[in-house]
Amino acid sequence: MLRNLVILAGLAAATGLAGCASHSPAPIPKDEMQTDQITLARDIGVGEVAPVPEKVASRFAMKDGTVNVFVVLSWNPADKPLGKRPIRWVWYDGSGERQLAQLGAEFNFNAAPYTVHGSMATKALGPGAHRVKLFVDGIERADKEFRID
Image (cartoon, rainbow, N blue to C red; front, side, top):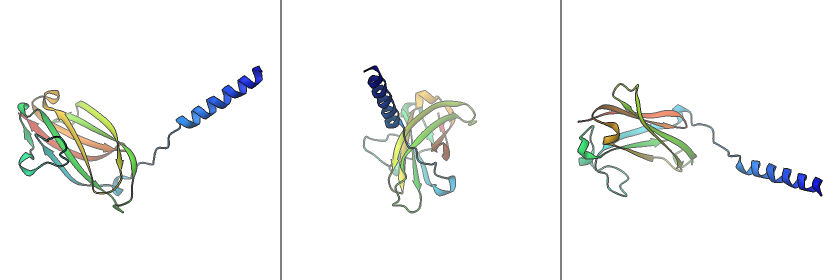
């Protein structure tokens, strides 16, 4: 009886471990994913997936509340799904050396062009020169400078 219990416990542990193993796709090489556009904008409404021209900015005021960044990425063939990929936004001071904030998520890159949207509160960054970078699979894909007055 004890032997059967040990075997069952071993099978349950092995099954659990196999179920927890995840398959991460290989990172997309830097030259196989292109950055087509990087746009900064203010006052993005709920459901907006791209900024309207009058909201595009590189200078923000503290009262704007949020800095939004949109990055359009592409790859070939455009209809080839790349699967779920980790992305990370990193927000820096103007020198690009002092990290102020970092946000990560996982996105399903199903077809190109693909727009990734990130945002950060102006209060979290403070006034001055800043930089935001987007990483996909740990590889830097976009970099943009801006200012908050």
